[in-house]
Length: 217
Image 1 (cartoon, rainbow, N blue to C red):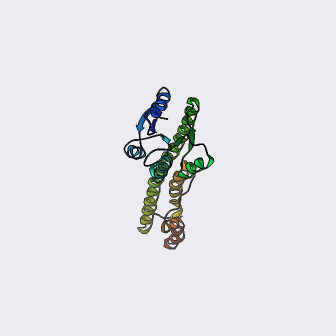
Image 2 (cartoon, rainbow, N blue to C red):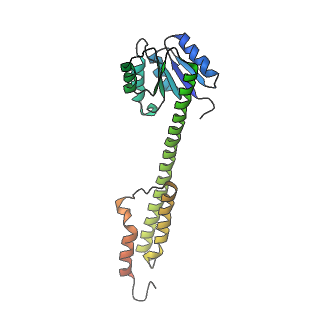
Image 3 (tube, one colour):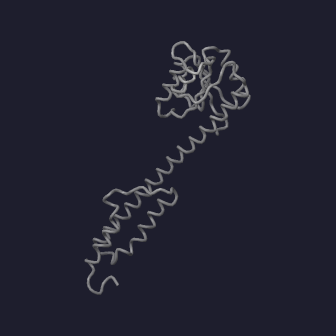
């Protein structure tokens, strides 16, 4: 988790924002304020936000609609959203869940409950961020290694055609080593292009026909 997670508080009543901010700043969180749904969406587009505390009942775009719009953005689809509401009917909460929120807080907000829910969702966000970054790194590594493997196979094919290698088996350990390098760190094997998969086998089959009597021994 960062030193100061950034929390966006959205409420059309300034006193509600100030109360939540007082609770959170004392715990080391950085706060950004928005007093409407429209302002909240603009703020999201220009700031790195870690969690949203979002009032439901606001003029213009309400909390449900803000939640729906945030979830339509692939970059924000895992951003934690807590709806803060005085509404207590089950159908109101179902509406929030269907919009895409992660949790609820009832007004008046209890400080200990607020802090517990915020901490829990930020831990989940940290894990999701870690997994996304790992996947990006893993994919980049595999692309580089697969490119090197394909290049090496092409070099072997060229050498064989030029008669620089006397036996295909001599080259297979190099191919196997390169492929193991891709598999080992990731635990995954990504298929090579179809025209490359059979290369070591094809070379092994064709080469003996090119070797004359007494050669290749």
